[in-house]
View 1 (tube, rainbow, N blue to C red):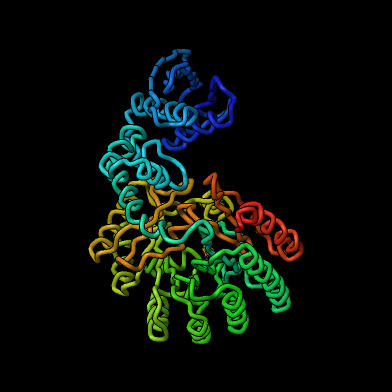
View 2 (view 1 turned 90 degrees about the vertical axis):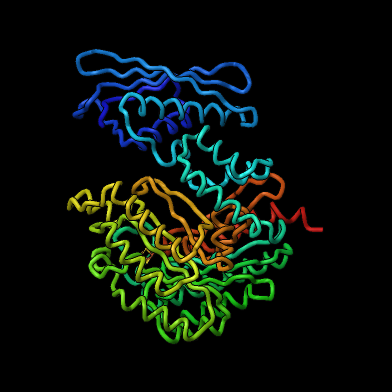
Length: 501
Ligand code: SF4
């Protein structure tokens, strides 16, 4: 649906964002004064009561081309245990959502008005407050119009995470190492990864990475932190040539490895980046978990999304890793890839589950700015599967993982997700990735090292995350490494130094 203009009786950024989120959910476009549109204007007027908990009445005016105006009003109340500001925002969102549902008879959105990357966070808060899982499922429906299926999913995920989140203490951290190179660029990717550069440039990267690792290791020692897990991601870390890859692993191992390490993961991503030498290096450096990410097991799809390998290469890679070392294997599948149907996903899931990985993450395609896919959709009219088809893909994929007994254990959402879906990690019981849980729940400090890495420091008392970022582009990372090291050090010291006994 297209509307020429939107007015809101508040310029506050957060209110505008809330209203626009609902418009995006129902695919309503604001086209500007000269664009072709179904309606001339949508006006949203929110009035907040002075009482506690707050209540919001939202009046909505919809103007047609012939000057006629339809008027609606909706009222939502906050709850006594909500922060008043958050209650007001939720009430506004709920009212605007109710307007679209009522006026245009659109079906409910699976997540209702529960937006944001980490919907499990609210479940954890309620669990800490003493609510039972059943009460939480009911309240997600009541407060957020969240469907019973999604409410049950995030509640189950959160409950399953509890024993993992209870491990360690305020000084337990994890390490992320970013290797920002890939062998080619996948169609849907917006990650700022670089194609593998010349050896000279790689050498420069390795030297800077060594300084970055040394500085972080020094901080970990000086501040008395304990490293729980190490995750080497990217990019595709295994896109490094054999000798560089082994050298990088050795540096990471020497900097952080010890008896305290519960998990050491390497993203191996694509079979065209793997070799017997790299598998041997991972074994030598005690890697415990390897990600092998087919995304699809359909040959024609792999070609369409720019991955230079076949489904058979994936199968061979999994067998070679298993034959050489005793590790957990993660596999990723993307739902909603261009040209695919639910039948393709069924075939992919059959091919993936027969390999019996320990962990399968089902991603819904997120159409990201900066991806070649987005560009192609604008210039070459590449079409994505419909939302309904992507949901059928999700149903088929979930059925496949549940049939082999895997259980959902981490979940996150992004903007512009196909089918208004989510990314969910499923694992065999006992094979859950601690790092995946910690990073998604923002429950622990993660020290980021390397290209495009983010350091997130969890406030011991405030519970808030503060972040610093290494540059996304390689030239800036190499040039300004001392600045990044200092910023990270300052953030870590600010949180942990005064706490040192
Ligand atoms: S391998 Fe991963 S990081 Fe590299 S281009 Fe493909 S999706 Fe992006």
